[in-house]
Image 1 (cartoon, one colour):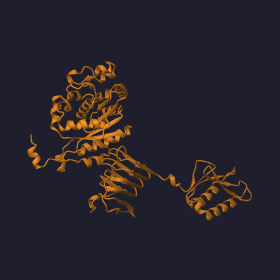
Image 2 (image 1 turned 120 degrees about the vertical axis):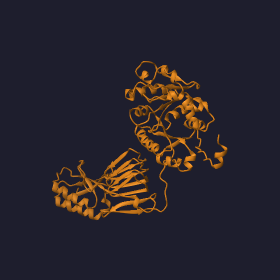
Image 3 (image 1 turned 90 degrees about the vertical axis):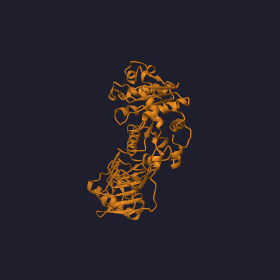
Image 4 (image 1 turned 120 degrees about the horizontal axis):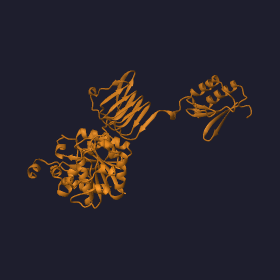
Length: 261
Length: 206
């Protein structure tokens, strides 16, 4: 039996899709078999981020409607052997999805893979519900913004009410320099408000934007970048390793001069 | 039975008061009054089962018994009926305990007292008709009937007995445990501890 984890946030643009793709890839690099599911029916992005758009033949709606088998719809990653994508449909809407059928599809996948990661859409409506329903665990992605943390708080409440008790937090786009100038929420205040375990803090990293727009997964394309390293650690923490969270030190005046690229 | 009109027995952990069906009711009442007078501490705030042993009590007679026992906070049932007479039992007091943080979008509305082991986050609403005790920080909207106690106050909106408490007018910092209650239609502030606490954080897997 694999683990079924929903990656969700409430607010849009915080990096749910990026986290799903990179975490899936990191887990696959640890030797686990992983499938990432795009649940954003009608606004699919995960395939674009992974650069697999032109390999899609069938999608999850086809699986649900019985047009194909699940393994026909799964797309293998370009570079990583044991990473698969189950794409969303672009021509349907979220209301076309029967939640019970999604649960059926996921239960087949969890018997064949170590990890099933569900990339939830933004919001707390139908699409969110159908991605939370099959999940046993949840990863909440927040950025150090007040609006993101508020939305995450609401989402955690809903996810808890659906009976998912294993909920962890990933703080994305954490800019230590902004935080040290008190222009963004700091780590402690985010944790204080949300009151859940933190799985990792991904630093703000231009490399993410760069690789995402190229259709390459960061942890595969630029494995040395700070954010890619943190994704690797998050994957190992998911696997049960006890790795303490270390925040970057803010760069001082001299650091800014000497580290400038 | 002898001549005693009322006997006390412990049956299955319950205190059962047996009334002699043939004794005159005035004897029964005076004997009960004697019992209550002499053994006040034994009865105090307890719960009794009265077994009439076939005797039918009129409503006047029941109200006489009720008067004796409600004075010392005792409640009782007659012949295992559902209805509870006398004083309200202590364990029936309306207290709701919430052992987690109240999150944004969650509404807690309760008739009675509420204890929250956690914070009240922004966007959460808590309505309590009596007292609210928060072992954490209040950051959301709170309406209480009588009294609110918390480790820290940063509320979006706080109403005590229908009156809005304005924290702009409070001089000292609000991250302190304090008690706000209504006394004679005025709102009183009381700081509970001078030390500044941190709002609660649940431990790993908690």
